[in-house]
Amino acid sequence: MNLSDIREKVKECRLCRLCEEANNSVPGEGSENADILFIGEAPGKKEDEMGMPFVGAAGKFLTEMLSACNIDRQDVFITNVVKHRPPANRDPLPDEISSCFPYLQDQIDIIQPNVIVLLGRHALNRFLPDLRISDVHGSAMRAQGPLAEKHIFFPVYHPASALYNPKMRDTLIKDMKKLPVLLKKIKKSNVSS
Image (cartoon, rainbow, N blue to C red):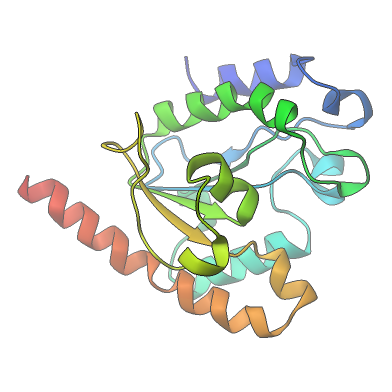
């Protein structure tokens, strides 16, 4: 299986109600060899229109932050916890998240990123359910369970938070600037082990 196979499966998916009102599926995009995987909550209006993740205002800010860290957007992979837009941008429901999780798990297994950046509380709660984003943003950590040995998680506030609260902008940029340093440490550790 590869990312194209997952893309096709997501396009055909009818496992939950989200596909009923969505214009397009939004499986994710980026490099299959990405060192960094970004996981957001769900596609928004613009993403639903274009079938691509993070292309609205929050996506523009994400791209800006990546650029500030000398990270090219095409070198990372960006996806969401759910692959279709929830009606009226409501939060995804637990059964919708569960229905989409196998696609996300397959993407993680194929890409094998060094770092998984969890964008906001919904992504954080999927992997580290006992933590609050306000307590752990900007910190690298491992999960308990089957992903523990494989992946390092790096939670940050969702980029959309800076659109509603301009004070969050500096916090997000400060957190994201830790990412290249973290990635360098991980790669150095992988080489020496």
